[in-house]
Length: 265
Ligand SMILES: Nc1ncnc2c1ncn2[C@@H]1O[C@H](COP(=O)(O)OP(=O)(O)OP(=O)(O)O)[C@@H](O)[C@H]1O
Image 1 (cartoon, protein in one colour):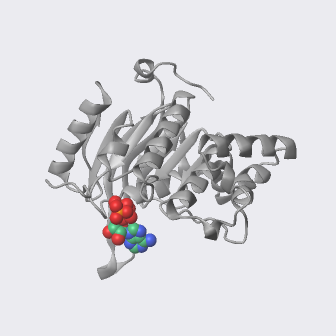
Image 2 (cartoon, rainbow, N blue to C red):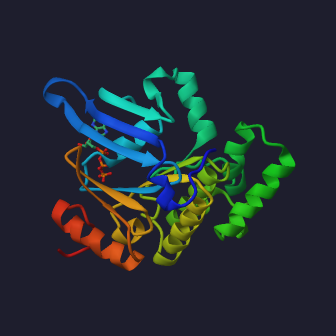
Image 3 (cartoon, helix red, strand yellow):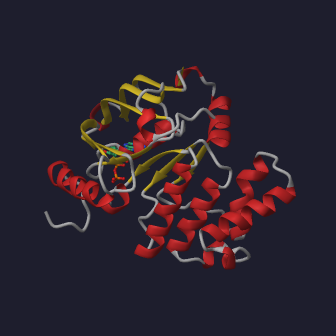
């Protein structure tokens, strides 16, 4: 994967992903909902982008389009210069399997399998050999502090533990793009910080990340935040200073756009 070195250099590179006046409509007639309305933004390779905005503003729709599990209605999305509409359904599935790690809001684990079996699934699908699979599972479990859970059934886990397993499953194949929808939503603050530091570490190792979150603390780990309201780009802010200063500007912007949870504006 091509990487453009330091974060300053990234600004001069070709955009990895471009949303160009993207609209998404669900349903028909009186039941039609416009989830996205002419939304345009770019993601550079190696960037950690946050998406924030009020409930129902279209954040998950953006992730679903990026994950190629949904189709846009109007506009254009390119990835590495290729229009996503040029991919067949088979190619879209392959892109997801090979290039992406997705941490959904709902961990969506297979309840008939153990933690270890859930985590290794994506590697087995990529035909990684058994010895490497074992090593990678233990490494990721160790890094996320869930090694003692590996032989448990997933239905015995707390929501926070399930979210970590979901993150491990998404990340283990070292995807070039990680998509995360509220990845810290069900975690206690210690685990949330741990996962965010882990995502930051992956970003330093040149993975691109897009994270949807309502939480300014989680968002402060990103390089840049786009704020979406009513399916449109409302504002964007870059991290130029300390994480604390970035957190404060995020909270300030959230007060304008709306959509914070547990913050009394
Ligand atoms: N499959 C669908 N069918 C119909 N409407 C949908 C569908 N998915 C999303 N919507 C609608 O599209 C709009 C945007 O939804 P989306 O889930 O993208 O918002 P969001 O910003 O992620 O919200 P939240 O923060 O609550 O998760 C909402 O009005 C939602 O009800």
